[in-house]
Image (tube, rainbow, N blue to C red; front, side):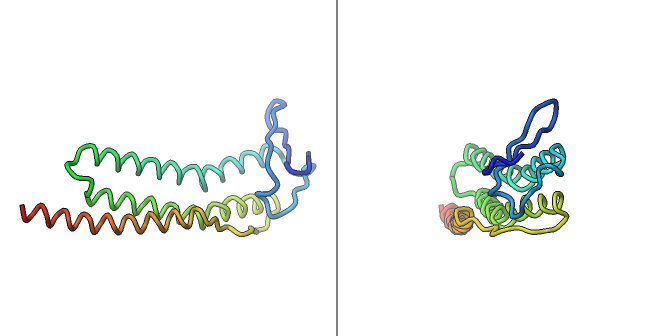
Length: 151
C-alpha cells in the first residue's frame, strides 16, 4: 500500500512494515512486491550497512576506555590505533551506507542496480576529524615515550 510518503507492506500474521520512500531511488509497485521479501531484505541490508559498523565503533570505544582505565597515561599507542579504526569506519559508512541499502534494495526489488547521492557530510567530517585526532595521538604517544625514557 502506498500512503504518499511511506510504503506499507503486510508481512507476518497481519503485521506490517512501514518504509519511507525517500530511501529508494526508484518507484515500487506495492501490489507486485512481496512484503516479506521487502522487509527481510531491508532489515538485512540495514544491519550490514549501518548497524554493524556502529556496533564496531562502540566496541572500539569500549576498548579505548578499557585501555585508559588500565594505563598510567592516556597516550598509549593502542588508543591511537583504535581511534584510527573508528575514523576509517566512519569513512566506510559515508561511502557504503546508502550505496548498499539503496543499491541492494533496487537489485532485489527491480533487478537493477541504482542509487542516489550516497554521501553524508556529517560522517565525512567525523571520519576526517577522527583520523586527524589519531595522528595527534600518535605524536603524543611518541612524546610520552620520549619523556618516559628521559626520566
